[in-house]
Amino acid sequence: MISTRDTYAARGSRPLWAGALLAVAAMALPVMPAGAAQTGFPERPITLVVGFPPGGGGDLYGRLIATAMSKTLKQTVIVENKPGAGGNIAASLVAKAPADGYTMLLAMSGNMAVSPALKPQTLPYRVPEDFAPIGLILEAPHGLFVEPKSKFGSAESVLAAAKQSELTFASTGTGGAAHIGMERIKELGGLKLLHIPYKGSGPAITDLIGGQVDMFFATASPLMPQVRQGSLKLLGVSGEKRSPSLPDVPTFKELGVDMALTQWYGLAAPAGTPQEVLQVLSHHLSLALKDPAVRETIRKDAAMERDLPLEQFGEYLVRDIAQYRTVATPQLLKQIGL
Image (cartoon, rainbow, N blue to C red; front, top):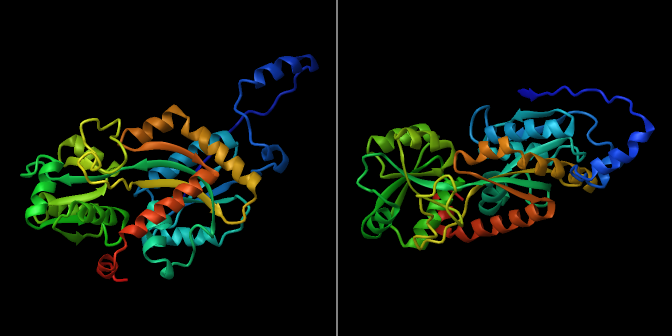
């Protein structure tokens, strides 16, 4: 467990005549939510529960936001890793935590949209009922990857070939967000695709390069270093529009397959957390997303920050669950063992 700690200078005294100047200067400062001064929140460290092991998956984004929020909250935000079950263990722990604002969840597509849409009866928590939305952090597109010497030089060529004969695609697990996204592409595009699940990106990429599978569909951001190194080729991405960092890579929507589902991350608290506390947390998340260093880190690997606070994030979450439910055909549910 890694903590992010900052030391801040003590407040000094100031003469009374400085009040007028301070009042003018305060007009240039960010406006704090109304409940912040009244609650005194936070008075102790806050825990951010992340459903990935250190260094894996969205752990990078969890630590990035924890560090940035610690600076403006003037209080430590501790990252606590609780990996397992695709992030569902972390979500279950936060759903049962005290609703006081001192425990947050790194919410994501898998544990807050895919699982509730496809297998709600198997979860020890309910979405959205057991959570209070704080805010969306970012969206990262899913990408269609091939090995560098693949006969497929474009997403168009893949789509055309998969309409004529069956191709294979790898994912990092049955029922994950990327798997469901590719199944949606298959359905909308009228494609012949066979899913080959793997336990993680490593073995999937090994078999992709070895020619055992035709393509790999996964969240793009973690694989961008390999694309830049030339060990993988990215042909197309999900999302509503092209990523600014990938101007030459088309979206599936552009290619006539309207699959805009993305991998997203946000913050949520246990249901019942006081509104004034949620406002404080959401405010400081917004400040973090305005930090140029935070934006640079998010954008360098094809993701994009999305500042949707409180109820707006809650509405986004409900819409995303609904989208995944449209993909949950009886055939797909049977395929993933439900």
